[in-house]
Image: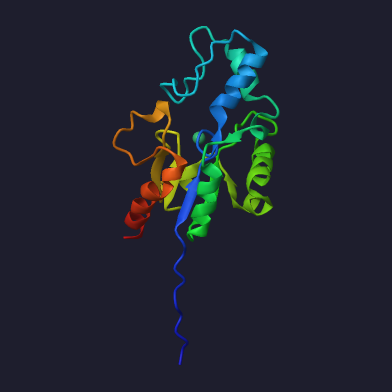
Length: 197
Ligand SMILES: [Mg+2]
């Protein structure tokens, strides 16, 4: 008699974006821009109206690229308020949590800095839970929490996009939205039930 094989029901997979979602990338970039040029026309976080709206009129593109490629940028990011507690609470609740982030292609140490920053703030075991990719649609998951509007790639995503609230993504008025990390349960659980149905 064949043994009964009980299918293992996988824990729901929640993918968490890093820049502008788990980490405060925008303020870190602005600090570097002002170090390079105290008069640089930065756009304060909360006033960016487009995902790529990183400087005001007259912003020198070379300085912007210099800042975006600055060694240490991804090593000196502050977690968003409540982000660490939320991720640890998700794990505690039995969710399968992975970070899913796109390294900046021309930044020489971006990928290694991202890993080091996760280790610093969450411990070494979380380094094994970082997925770095330039195409998030290739990554399987139930929900992707991400500030970027319009995430596309080579596949139809298996995940639903839970928009992490930023001023530049509010045009996605109908999309599920996480306004603050402390509210993760109320925003995430309805989507996981939808994904499991
Ligand atoms: Mg992001």
